[in-house]
Image (cartoon, rainbow, N blue to C red; front, side):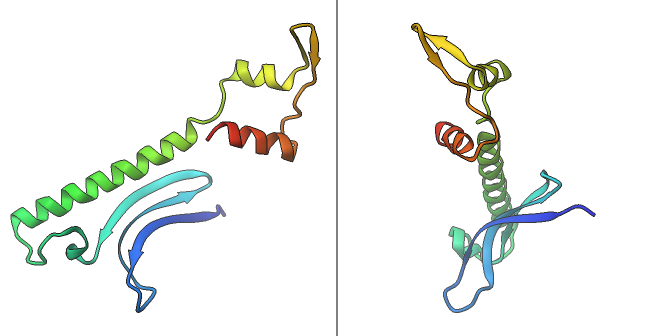
Length: 120
């Protein structure tokens, strides 16, 4: 059985924990299965509640833009990893300007924290 994780970005009203509108992405086994935008209150986006062809197109456009922004953010987070040759140089001992530089032990918590800071 695979683990399931759901990432939700949204807006909730102050009186209850019910989500009014937002975007979510469902993940299983470290893979995104789907990304969707939920609009429960069109007024959140300045669109009238009356469903017409014009308001439908406005809501579709808002949903598409929101999904695109969420997917772009997820892609940017994935593009952080260094290329294999750079990673090999980091985890191998070397000599720079005549000075020995020790290898960084990949997987060590401090090394992983350093790499995470460099990827921001």
